Picture 1 (cartoon, rainbow, N blue to C red):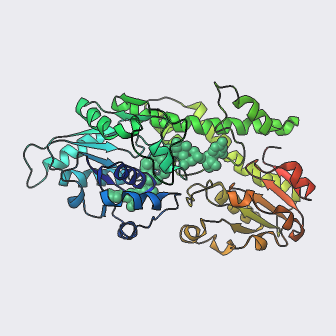
Picture 2: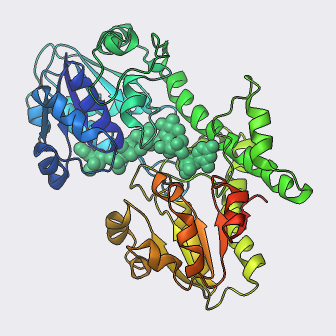
Picture 3: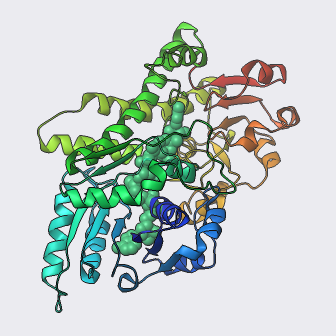
Length: 454
Ligand SMILES: NC(=O)C1=CN([C@@H]2O[C@H](COP(=O)(O)OP(=O)(O)OC[C@H]3O[C@@H](n4cnc5c(N)ncnc54)[C@H](O)[C@@H]3O)[C@@H](O)[C@H]2O)C=CC1
Ligand SMILES: O=C(O)[C@H]1O[C@H](OP(=O)(O)OP(=O)(O)OC[C@H]2O[C@@H](n3ccc(=O)[nH]c3=O)[C@H](O)[C@@H]2O)[C@H](O)[C@@H](O)[C@@H]1O
């Protein structure tokens, strides 16, 4: 089928490249010429494992352009995957989506095109995009005859760092539309994934437990709400583990054992119970805020979602308090942070816990040293004020340091020869912000090991 994808960020690029890999003819549009140039050269503008390999494997079905005129005409499906960041009041800023929809309407010329909201958009956005498309289409100077279109929602559930596997081997696909023909088109588009009939990419074999993928085919509003409800649930699951973690620290229980004991109950499940400095990233914060904003439009409070957010921001503050408890005085102390990206295997710094922790330490007079194996290039661009604190060397981070915090559990850090660094520190305080290091071993090596919860 002929597919157009608007926006080549984490979601748009993964969608476009994966669909091209499956044999669809895909054109990706982005307004950012630099991104398009890189992608045309086979280079990926974001750090996403496997993406350049998949780009190479899908190259023959894939075109990148800044021109809607080149991409939209003739497309059976147009995915809109532009950013939807939080506006001042917490609701999503839909300017990018509006502009994309208006541009799509200027170029539609096919007998039937499904315009799909893949961005995470508030409930009701399907109708809103439909109205924008129709208004903009009506305003065209030359309107082609026999052009029909309908809007669908196809929320995305990929995780950064795991984007390709999450797309090719998803837990489910959700499509929502009030137009049966759209559902049929999207069902056809996704058939190779639903039935798992494609040949797996050479670098990413099909997992042994990969089965046929359940398809949730529903109405627009339900599809839109599924996305927010799922993200908020994942966020509150982590916050719950962190809230229990704080009690565990008080009563002398080990939160890692508690989470394991809870997670083995299949009704609870062990994933997303990892305690620590809490969740960050571009979506959990923004989407929980948006859910609360939507509910308030209906005079509905969302106390559980609000609490999940409060617990999460408290975890970042608790990390700093732990350091203060250990060091008593933070002024003048040298404190190293290992890991800046909001999680491993990405260079995404949006709402990364490391940023709040670094800023809070600096505000209290500490001198920080910041390290990340991948995200420093992006950090320099996005965080110019903090860039002076960056260090390229782990030795430099530990040397004369009063405390080191493991903020992001990159494999490189877990595999460090920790015995080598303890002697470089002024005081060997090690705060495990992710509860991933072996506490007993670290203590044997001479560290004063502390964790965020206990
Ligand atoms: N990042 C993630 O892991 C996930 C994100 N989402 C949702 O997907 C949406 C996109 O997120 P990301 O991919 O992270 O965003 P992003 O910021 O990485 O990428 C958005 C891209 O759209 C381009 N763009 C903006 N306006 C445009 C226009 N009018 N025409 C053409 N291109 C345009 C931008 O230049 C940028 O390259 C958001 O709504 C987000 O909530 C959903 C699931 C996962
Ligand atoms: O809508 C989105 O953008 C995406 O948001 C999350 O994906 P992502 O933000 O890429 O990363 P996650 O792996 O979910 O991690 C989010 C944050 O939670 C933290 N986390 C995760 C799991 C856990 O047990 N504990 C924990 O603190 C991570 O360190 C990270 O900061 C969801 O997992 C995706 O399904 C969703 O599509």
